[in-house]
Image (cartoon, rainbow, N blue to C red):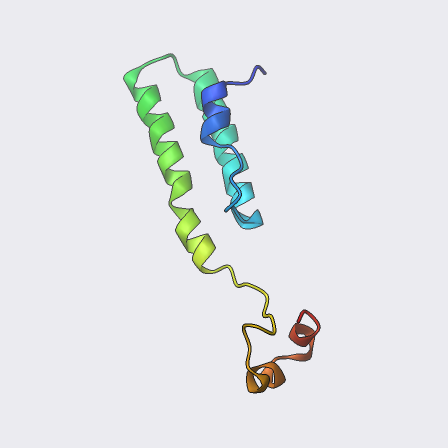
Amino acid sequence: MPTNEKIENAFMYHPYQTSRYESLREDAKALAYEIDRLCPESREKSLAMTKLEEAIMWPVPQLLATRRPKPTTQMCSRSQREALPEEAKEDI
C-alpha cells in the first residue's frame, strides 16, 4: 500500500509519547489508511480524518500525567529514600 504523507505526518512519533501511546497511534494510523482506501474524497472523509487526529490527541495529557519518573537521590530526602521499597532503591 502506498504511503500517504498527510497520514504519516498526522500520526508520526513525537518525543513526548510514551510506549502506551504508541499502540494507540499505530492503531489510529491503520484506521486512517483504511478510511483513505475505502472512502472517496469528500467533506465527510475530511471530517472523519480530522476527528481521528483529534481523538488520538486526547489521551496524551492523561498518559503524560500518569507517567511517573523514577526516583532519584535529588528527588528524595533521606527519610523518603528509606521508605522506598527495595526494588525502587535499586534505581537510585
